[in-house]
Length: 190
Image (cartoon, rainbow, N blue to C red; front, side, top):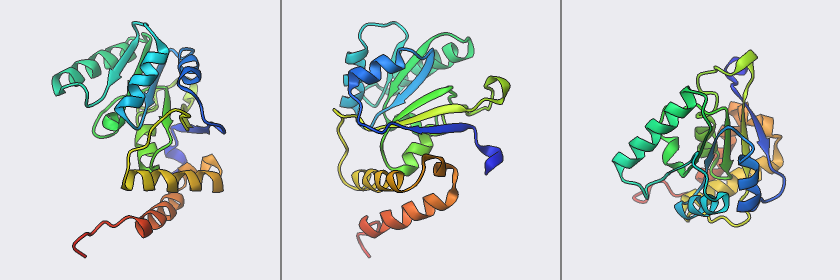
């Protein structure tokens, strides 16, 4: 597992506003932000303002538009051009993309790791550097209901109890899923 570590995890200690987050990601040349809801993604885009290197990806876009956005993001990444992608969890499943910096709103632990999988995915950062994944709690954000919210709450508790570096430890995920499955009914028909 140590050999496969391609990222360093960071945890914001305090909730962060959309404007604070917008100011922070504006300092990055290539960065992806993954949020829990489409409304949160639009709120962050509003806080960023009119910048041409900001792209948005969510299910608010139809399939072809999502493909076009991803094509443009990949082109910019490949050519070293500035790109700031604001996305929902739609980016976490089956999308082969490689950012040097990823910000992920607190969510279920398995979703956080999915977002981290889009950071330094190819291990191509110079001098063997690791990508940076920052987990934050949006002070103005919303949380989807149901099992997603339960997973988010379990992840928050574990991130308080364990050091952020434990996100590289497979044992943490066993504990997470044990706690999660106590509270989430996965078999309504028993």
